Length: 122
Length: 99
View 1 (cartoon, chains in turn red, blue):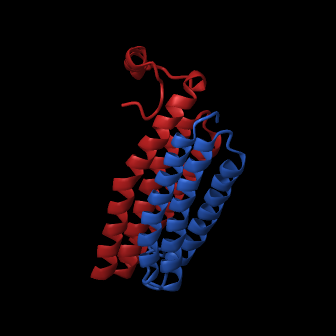
View 2: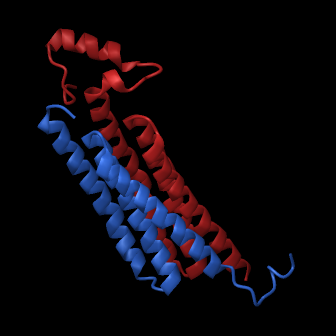
């Protein structure tokens, strides 16, 4: 019976965090802020819901598959977020309201050297 | 308080109702951002979060209807969500132009 309580709390908490992520995606002001809400809170909520499923099912196969899902999600979400954030930075640098901008000097020096300012200019 | 922990009381149906409401609201808000998003990056990011919501819905269905096979669907959804986000981001980056 305590297992039902634990999985109930985990499932409600996970869906609550997914809801918070969606709320942040709807309400926050610019692309990088929305990405901050979507990646972290969304991944944490999905992880909590998977943990609730494992506690509810209580067998080894489900646990191994849930670990596989969480590993896929947590390894790939930063890569996708990095790609999108990079493009957003290059496209919308003027309208992002950045507090600090450490990358601007590097980009300026590089574009002076190569005379291009493209997202794929490494 | 001891009524709640009595062996006849099962908290899981109530928890599943609450989490269904939260997940429906989350999908609706994410789709609203996908519809409205001012730039392509907003739309791609909303699509990524919609994939996460679909994964959470699969977990909800697996608990509600006792279908442990749905976690295989969750594995495939996690991989496909990453691949689609990366492909769309690469396409946007290569396309150039505004927005």
